[in-house]
Image (cartoon, rainbow, N blue to C red; front, side, top):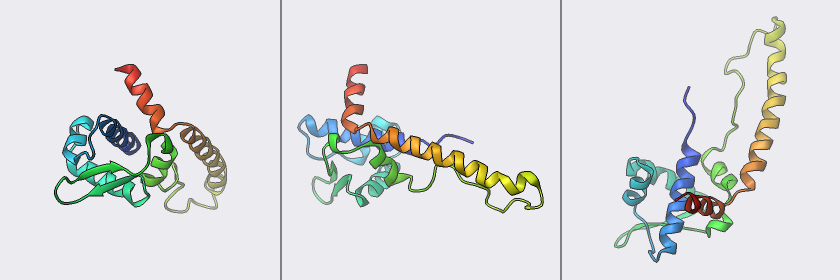
Length: 143
């Protein structure tokens, strides 16, 4: 099972757009962003399409087409990005109901759900503390 990198890619794309705009450019193309992320432009377009539906990015069509931030980096938290691209829970219980006659099968759902609820709450708290402005600051420090 591999880790999901959608949050990292989305944060990368939005942070890149923010820096690009600060450097005097109005819009960024999917190809430019994809070069930085090292992925296919289609991946970037799909992800930014999701982010545009919740007001984090805006697309421009036609001449001078590309992507812009809908809000300043300081007004976008990692939680905003996470909720836009990962609307479901971090963990899930069984797809099929375990054997209710088995002591473990009967009790595993409630036991794990309590842990998962705590993990989800902690994740959301931590993501809410960090803006994309914070991410950009840390990126530039590391450069």
